[in-house]
Structure formats: C-alpha cells, structure tokens
Image (tube, rainbow, N blue to C red; front, side):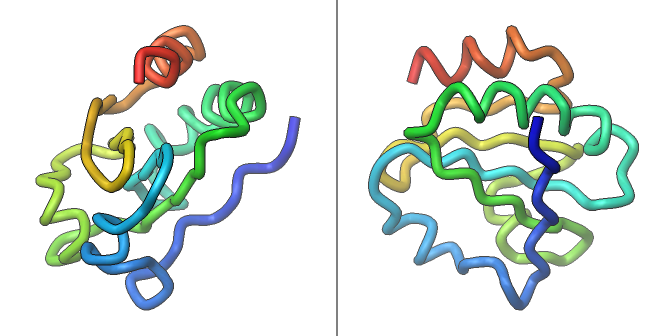
Length: 108
C-alpha cells in the first residue's frame, strides 16, 4: 500500500474555474493533515484508488474561509466530491469503509 499524498495548500490548490474545467473523473478530497477523521479515511482511500486508476485524486486542505471548500459547501472532513467533466456527480462525507468508497466510484 502506498503512502497517502499530502493535502494541497490554499496557494497550491487549483481554483474553482480550473476544477470546473477538468475533464474525466476526478475525486476532490477536502480535509487536513491533522484531522483524525481524515487520517482514518486514508487507508481506505489509498486502497480503493489503487484499484481505480482512471480517477484523478486531488487533495485540498480546507479550513474556515477557504474559497474552494466554501464553494462546495464543505462542512465536515473529509468530504469527497466525485466529479465527471468538472460536474459533481456524488459526494461522500467522512467515509471509512473501502466498500462505500468503491461503490461510489463504480456508480459514476
């Protein structure tokens, strides 16, 4: 199993216009490196994403006043926004089970 990649800071993360312009399948993950729920979700995410190579995974550090997270109305971490061609098609909040994440990726 590979190591989870870090969350992109506010200055590193793409803006909403760039996210909206993405083509293909994207899993946009909002959270932080210190959040217990985010840390608990990482093993399941790494495992599932290793079996779904067509998904592009973008981890965005979120927090109060962060414009990208607010534009998606993120309230709890981690929040996974599943997108096809820049449009939200599904959302998971605080997932921990591989079966839940895999099912969401498979229905999109």
